[in-house]
Amino acid sequence: MTQALKNTGATADSVTFRRMTEEDLDAVLKIEYAAFTHPWTRGIFLDALKSYEIWLMFEGAQQVGHGVINVIIDEAHLLNITVKPESQGRGLGLRLLERLMSRAYELNGRECFLELRASNLSAYRLYESFGFNEIGRRRDYYPAAGGHEDALVMACTLFE
Ligand SMILES: CC(C)(COP(=O)(O)OP(=O)(O)OC[C@H]1O[C@@H](n2cnc3c(N)ncnc32)[C@H](O)[C@@H]1OP(=O)(O)O)[C@@H](O)C(=O)NCCC(=O)NCCS
Figure 1 (cartoon, helix red, strand yellow):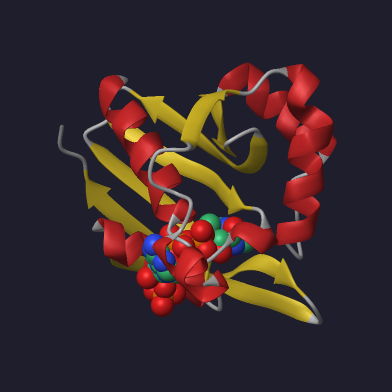
Figure 2: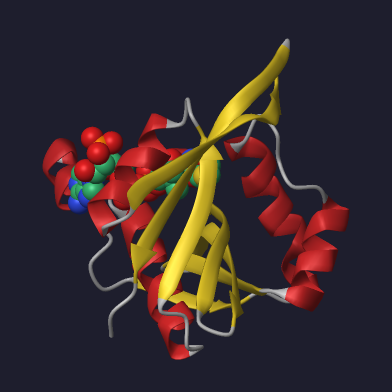
């Protein structure tokens, strides 16, 4: 019973999205720090709120993730996508990615680019399942425990 509930996922109709404001900062940082080894800091989010669009995802009343996009002319960039660790693996990442990409399209983005750590397989699979392709690699782009790590660059054409 529990397994059946888990696998069907409470994701179908109860997921909602809204723009982040400064009042959401503490809740966002809690999820960000739980999900990443190298999280965005409070200062980065404050700057991002001024320059980019930050969207929050809720499952019922519970905040379960956030994502950040920037669109310049027709080029979109996905700068952050995060699902709360306890809520991962149930399709919420894909829901959030779909919402962010449809918003990027609304803002006239026709191609989206992103970077991710070469070791981040769950993110890679998520992006691939949406339609992103790997188009390049930046050597030693990210700081990592004991050194640096490559970034993979991925791109996807956006459709309505
Ligand atoms: C990357 C991240 C956003 C993915 O979020 P997520 O909610 O786990 O993603 P999804 O559930 O949509 O997809 C993950 C897996 O769940 C599976 N899944 C999707 N829908 C499902 C459903 N209804 N029921 C069960 N599993 C499902 C997917 O097939 C996928 O499986 P796979 O890994 O075998 O391909 C999340 O892992 C995360 O926040 N990681 C930390 C932050 C991070 O690294 N962000 C990306 C930076 S580039």
